[in-house]
Image (tube, rainbow, N blue to C red):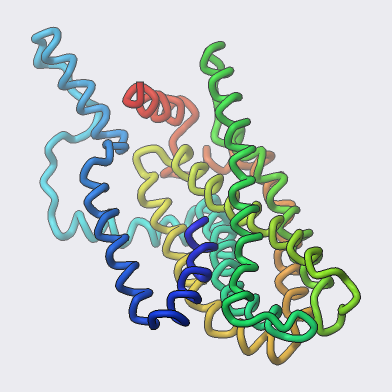
Length: 324
């Protein structure tokens, strides 16, 4: 998410200095380097990690009858690929309530960050700000600051996690979304604050005040992405990739759609009303974390794909053993 905040800044300055083509050239170079780095990324699939443990046991004990609990060496066919990679994520999206709500919430966060690439330029180039195109892009620094502040709840999560492991206490997926209960209301508050500290209807508020709203928005959007993806991964075990794919599909499509109407909405309705509409939508979802905390475990138990609590704990321990 930090890249989404810093991207508009570098692309604006690169476009104005050496041309828009270099935005894509630099992106290609960075992605090429990232692709090379992916070669050295450690395995995270639970089944693969389990196979590694079984293989290690076979080598240490000499007992070849030790097998993992899933079909080992299953041949990958086109039909199996289509079922696992294409149709199962769609099935998750339309039949599983948890995946559906995680997808909607992540879509809102992703759509907002892409919509801001259009709206912030409109807001800060208008009177009384009168920023240049390049300077207006620096408003994304406030969003980036908010995203970096999101490291604080991650430090708290790590502390709680280590504390639970030392006492051998079980950590349920719902116990990891505490910061989400802060981020969801903060998103609504940040949008309302931003909506009514900017022109044209509000001109007497000092310029930095609107940046406070952007910091809150950045904090919330980053937390949405981190927590909901982590929640889906912990909840669905071996089907986590399908759950995450469903969420990614929804948020990517929403981000593309937001780009189609943001400019027209802000120029037609005005920055205050347009942002207020987004704030109202965010307000509708401000209490969803508490619904996850109250009903999440019950919905997981009803899902035919979600791992039960013991499986979720085993899935988590496999990851931790691989890290150790």
